[in-house]
Amino acid sequence: MRTATILISVLLASCAPDQSQEVTRASKIAPLPHSDKVLTRIAFGSCADEELPQPIWQMIAAENPDIFLFMGDNVYADNNRGAPVENFTRAELEFSYSTLDSHADFAPFRASVPMLSTWDDHDFGKNDAGVEFELKQDAKELMLKTLGTPQDAAMPARPGVYHSATYGPVGQRVQVIMLDTRWFRSALKETDEHGAEGKERYVPDVDPSKTMLGDAQWAWLKGQLDQPADLRLLVSSIQVIADGHGWEAWRTMPLEREKLYSIIEESGAANTIILSGDRHVGGLYRKTISPDITLVEVTSSSLNLPWSNWNPDKDRVAETGPYQIGDLYGGANYGTLDIDWDARQVVGMLKSEAGTATRTINVAF
Image (cartoon, rainbow, N blue to C red):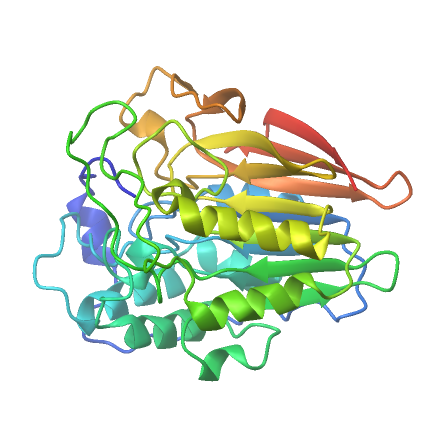
């Protein structure tokens, strides 16, 4: 989601590679951890405009995370050279991924910090796009070339970019599930009050034929949740628990969200933390879905296009919802999860671009 057009300097645009060039790797991609690696610190974030400076990568690298989860809007292919793209082609995707590939801030990070990635709409290729987008296979090819192939060897050959990875021995196993909320997603129901609070762009659609993940991904996800894990991270590019706004989120398909809650409950996956992005604000959420399962969601967005860009004097966002914990954070941010295996506790933090903790939540598992 992008709520305003960002004017990018001509100098930055002129320094980017020509859009006709194929994406080339400016530096190596850090290898993913071995499957028996015990994870103790995980970093995550979303929404990074490849044509703007990205100094936040240096701060994330200084956290020395075991892995970074790139949660979507990893480039803005539909808004390059400082303006929205009217006639979208593969060339726009190539330009954006090539620009990210050689980005002075990002390339050293990619070479030193292992990374798992999924996409949202702008790196998929088009604002709020879903199943109808015609260039999604091109976008997948370029994303894998630029950000690396996942631990899940089956992902490159199947439709979509959903995948998973599990790290650590028995008793210290972390399962990371990266969802794809774009490739199969049905059309959203547009609001009848554009811009109205809580109905800004989309309203809930209870059409049972609509899908967020598609049949194949739903079946895959159920199988993933049935696998043994001591801690699960469920990564959705768009928010899951959050209500109270009319932007893209799982709330737009309430039957699909209830289906997600149901399979989590049926699997007994009480040790699940949801991570999301998209919103250009950071926030914490909590919802009890059964007597035994309370879900926590941490939304981290944006790495360099925060809400405060349009409201420079405000870091706190007035938006509230029934499952929101405290105020939203409107500055540039990233997230960290510190896992204490002895105490069986995760400390989740949203951190500013200076590395200062702005929101904190403790989760026992």
